[in-house]
Amino acid sequence: MLNPSGMAATPGTIKKQNQFSVVLRRLSKNSSAMIGLIVVIILVLMAIFAPLIAPYPYDKQNLLNTRKPPSAEHIMGTDELGRDIFSRIVYGSRYSLSIGFLAVLFSNLIGMTLGALAGYFGGITDDIIMRLIDIIQSIPGILLAIAISVVLGPGFINTLIALGFGAITMACRLMRASVLGIRHQEFLEAAVSNNASTFRIITRHVVPNSFAPVLVGATMSIGNVIMSAAMLSFIGLGIQPPTPEWGAMISGGRALIRSCPWMVTFPGIFIMLTVLAFNMLGDGLRDALDPKLKK
Amino acid sequence: MTANLNSFLEIKDLVVEYTSEGSVIHAVNGVSFSLERGKTFGLVGETGAGKTSIAKAILRILPDPPAKIKNGQIFLEGEDLLKIDEKNMRKIRGRKISMIFQDPMTALNPIMKVGKQIEEVIKLHNTISSKQAREEAGKMLELVGIPGERFNDYPHQFSGGMKQRVIIAMALACNPELLLADEPTTALDVTIQAQVLEMINKLKQELGTSMIMISHNLGVVADICDDLAVVYAGEVVEMGSKAAIFDRAAHPYTTGLFAAVPTLEEEKDRLAPISGLPPDPSNLPLGCHFYPRCPIAGEECKLGKIPLIEIEAGHFCRCIKIAAMES
Image 1 (cartoon, rainbow over the protein chains, first blue to last red):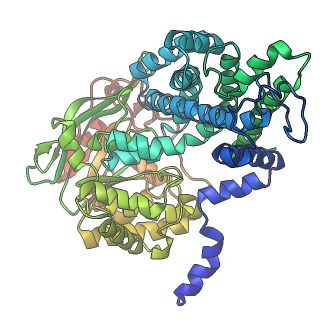
Image 2 (image 1 turned 30 degrees about the horizontal axis):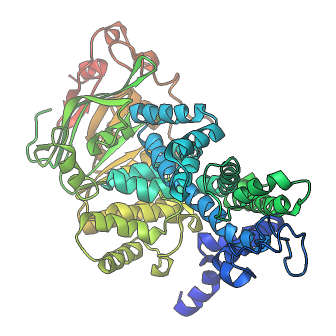
Image 3 (image 1 turned 135 degrees about the vertical axis):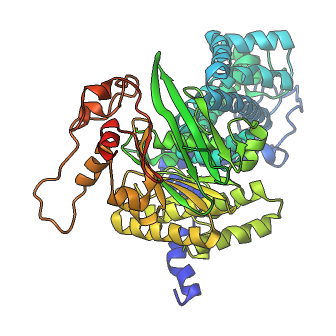
């Protein structure tokens, strides 16, 4: 007590660590989550520095050098117009990742808001919101995405909306369940008795305390959304060629799957890797955010 | 029970009901009492007697539904709190009246730094800069005996007693005129209880706060209150000054409570409990709510509603038998 600097140094060094670093440390002990995280980071870096990594422009055609198998010059071969598949995959990560992130961000913002309102207010608000969610959820996700994307037409933003819409339901349900878990805790009552406004209570007390499961759900759904985006491009909706979207690349190569398998294999591997990485990261995050779940 | 216009807080005929799956639970049935400025009023009773419902009714934070204030008036400095609109009520919450909650483990937001939580309360009521609010919050922490360098710690880094101190600091942060302490020491062990009580007492005197102390512990009430009311099944069964009730307890329930407390003077193998259980609040007995457990009950106790009778100046008792004996 007499030595304030000593006080701060001894118990302080053990205690002064924020939630974020605690979660990060727990995450770092989970090897599969770390592999997922590293793959995700590599993919993100690849998307950001695409012009530096890709050996050729993604749309540079070379009609003298079409459908070539992997070689030293084109490590993943070339497609039917002689474009370098590796360069196209590198650029394609920009579209796949940004659709994944943005669609999940969009759907989770809406879903979290609805879920928090439903869980906090309960009663008629809860009934209306949850019945709406039930209606959305009663339509199979893929069918809903196809329907919306047909109505809105192809394009980046429209694909985003088509894919994000179905994911609202999960974010909303997770948020609501999580809010219900803390709804009757005394600190919320204390906040009311201290004259905090409802908006303040929801944004400062309810949402931050219910956020963890939603974050895990969001990470997992990035993988799903990327897969659905590829699926939409594959059936000709969503992002259109010549944009090097991975699903569109598979779609373009599917007629030649027997003679030139590299045209579909490499984009396929990247889709698989990305989805796997996000799911592994999500699993790890779930364990790190809720240590009680660990065996 | 004449209306005392000078009193700081005056509660008249408060009735609170909860509806649960079709049945009505009579939690508070016509409670009246008054509190003078700077004094401490104790509400004593068993679990489920309606003490907390009374406190929450004063702040108007009862969860509605299922709870409903059916009847009554709550005057704070002559103004009926049950009649003013929500906007004005919000000016009163935290600023004029604040509450200390029962369980320190859940009454703090687990993911917010404790200093921030106090700071937030201060900012909600005063138009001051964040920096000033932070300084104020730091002062409040020091006031309840927590070193200022723990401002940035999270609730899980504190022990139960320290958390309760933080909660008290939050409740006192805006210098409320009335403090509702809902069993502030129940969740703490005995030595910490004594510390916290002593601190509440000291702060109350320093800041001149009036207080309603809710407890089921007679010792706590004896320590801290000026007047008290014994609550049973949502009714005040006995009310008076601390001296009147501790020295001359009249109602059979109150005497039963005192008989159940071990004393240091006597050697006793067994304590004398009050037989039976409190009545089901959705199905209260007619007449006196206590007669099924009362050692002196007679047929006349089952008949009508028993009034609160003044058996000596300022000492009220809800029992016709005792009143008959006294007169």
